[in-house]
Amino acid sequence: MDYVVFGKGRECLVMIPGLGDGLVTVKGMARVLAVTYRMYAKNYTVYMFSRKNGLEKGYSTKDMARDQAEAMETLGILRAKVLGVSQGGMIAQYLVADYPYLVEKLVLAVTLSRADETAKKVIGRWISLAKQEDYQGLMIDTAEKTYTEKYLKRYRLCYPLLGLMGRHKDYGRFLIQAESCLSHDASSELWKILCPVLVIGGGKDKIAGRDASVCMAEKIPGSELYLYEEFGHGAYEEAKDFHRRVMDFFAK
Image 1 (cartoon, rainbow, N blue to C red):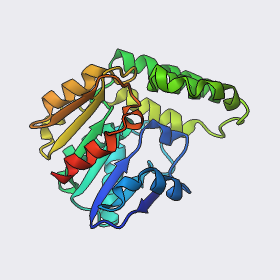
Image 2: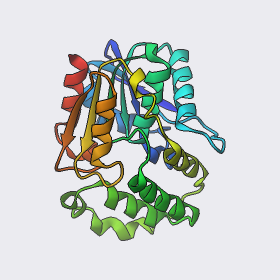
Image 3: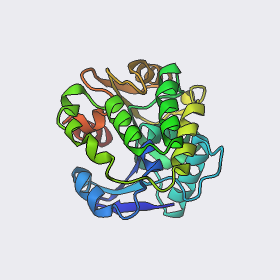
């Protein structure tokens, strides 16, 4: 399992990224990630994990949580703050439900407890594009479903360049992870999550949907909910105060 670590804080922060990990892992990305998430480095030693190398067919989000727990225990990471984004949030739900001693506080961002028809339709299209090895189509559809119109206007001119980047070498990893999103259903496990939780959603989320965040917050005892009504699935990138909101919650 590839992971990167940066920061000098006394507390541990574990970040679990989304489905994009199926195409690009964190290997070799330490410098880039350290700069991108530098706001956490003062207060935390930050660990960002990819899924394990060599995914077997049928590998589920619950299996991913099991292996995430093993990795944390191996590295001596106990009672960590955890930030799970999108599919990373799906994994984090099982992580804290099944291994509560590893997680002190949890932020679930733009994620869902089970895939509804909207999510299945979107992810199903991505699976179809991946099977066709249509990298350009996959990247464009992902962007269009993730970001707001204002954000996309700045980047649509770059779409033709995606076709010049060549083919992705192997879509197997992405397909296994995408299939796990379709079968994810932790809705009956949410009552087990007893640590402090902040659920962050996007009011215009075209992938997870607005209601997914509301439903999760209702089912997780004592959890807090914040909705960025003007943003979609990319709220964690577009909202300027996203990381400050996460850090303020962890600092309580």
